[in-house]
Image (cartoon, rainbow, N blue to C red; front, side, top):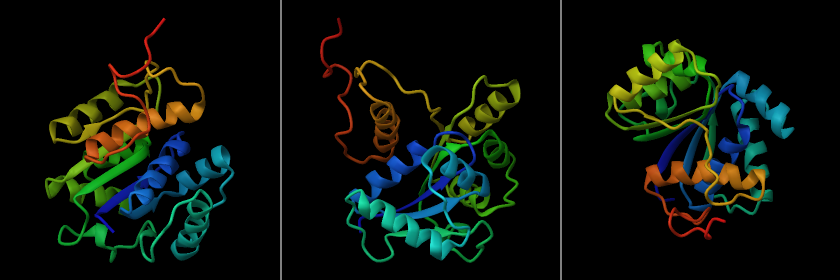
Amino acid sequence: MKQQLTVAMTGASGAPYGLRLIECLLRQQQQVMLLISSAARVVLATEENIKLSAGPDQATRQLVQYFTELGCQIAEGQLQVFGKEDWFSPVASGSAAPKQMIVCPCSTSTLSAIATGSSNTLIERAADVVIKERGQLILVPRETPLSTIHLQNMLQLSQLGVTLMPAAPGFYHQPQSIADLVDFMVARILDHLGLEHQLMNRWGYAKELS
């Protein structure tokens, strides 16, 4: 396995973004430490009809099967789900946590908690660890319209070096499906992680626009 990354999914709409990101990371043999909030499980069931167990071990087995059926070859321990209060997991400590973390999708509630350093759940603590250790934290909020509170929280995080990447796919690559729009966002995330991909044509290489 190449490197460790922390991926968190929270209760904002946009489960397809998170699932596609994890799929791409697994296909590149990255090790994924996955954190899923209770609200994210509701979203997964609503948007993707995935009824994920609240138990981390069972959830891990479910997702390994899900991504294996998509064609991913997953090594033992490559994908691991942690519970929301698993304080002994590697992501909870600066001495062991991966230096890169993506929250996709990121609810405005999670955004607020990270901005204030509340650390009441493992997702919030993991994000706090990445910030304090000067790692790379990418948040993919999905909300509209944005209130002044949301914008202030985003500004505060941006000033701390966090990358705010709203789920706002472009259209210059002439998407033909929802999957193309999902891939646009996942491609931008992979770009910021420094990982190669061929999910979409880059600007200047797309077909000539009519």
